[in-house]
Image 1 (tube, rainbow, N blue to C red):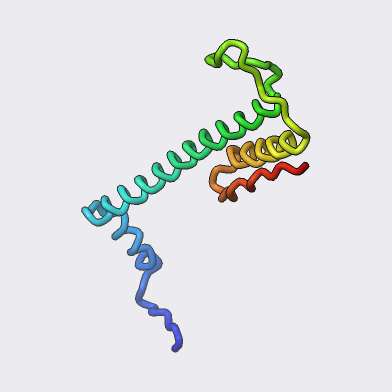
Image 2 (tube, helix red, strand yellow; image 1 turned 90 degrees about the vertical axis):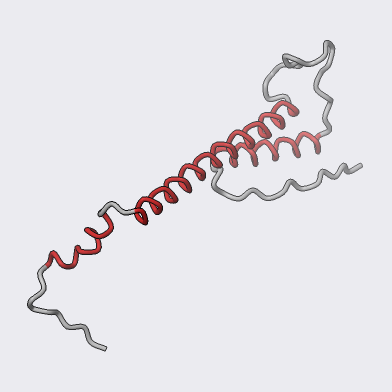
Length: 120
């Protein structure tokens, strides 16, 4: 199957598809609406994932004491952070790193959290 070039055709005929695409029509308008809707939906979902992952990261940072305070606004008086074992500390530190990375890269998949196993 060979391709031949028609000597009578002009270079502007190659751009005919672009002219047809740029012509206003209901079909082109619907395609534009779908593309914009999917784009805006993807951006909205990425922002929601970022907020969700940031909240989880902050929770784990608070548990390991990364904020430097022992009480948080809105908590009952006298309520403090639990005392953590070294394994609990390392678990929450790893979870903080995981969710902090996920908040910065919300388009990447996030694996489920591993179960925490207390070793004696």
